Length: 202
Figure 1 (tube, rainbow, N blue to C red):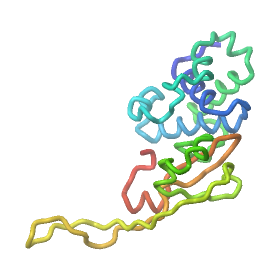
Figure 2: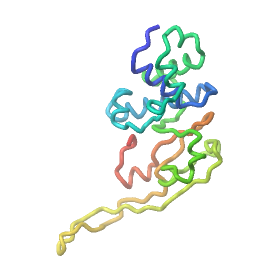
Figure 3: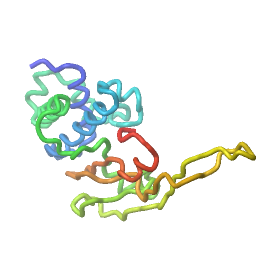
């Protein structure tokens, strides 16, 4: 078994970001979320994705022991460890875009800090929607902020940019797609993307 650098990196991220239960859907969901976002963002490699968004996954830089363990493990050590082998298989499938995506098309995820840091969490401040009760693994309350986006025009008299017709409205920036173990998965809300002309992967 030869592990290429990109597959190892993705496996280590999924292994490190997931809880210690070695849940196939949790680890697989994280691997797929990363691969999904990399594909959507101009077919980037995992390394290129992390360079474009350095704060995407903290396991890479916060001393996460599971991430460090898999990155340093020999191929023999990976093969002898069920959790690391699982992460490697999930990463391989996610990169090849084969099999079932446990994240259901997610590009992001959150762990337990979504509950413990609820008051200060960026997604809470943005507004988030739990689309199925089963996704609310942390038993948190949704937040929503009705926001109206306008087309801009230049005022002929003043030369200043002013609001014109309504471009769109949204209440949430984030929408859940799945949840396993201690991880909840996310994508952007469709109304948010339409109103802001945003990119699904940013």
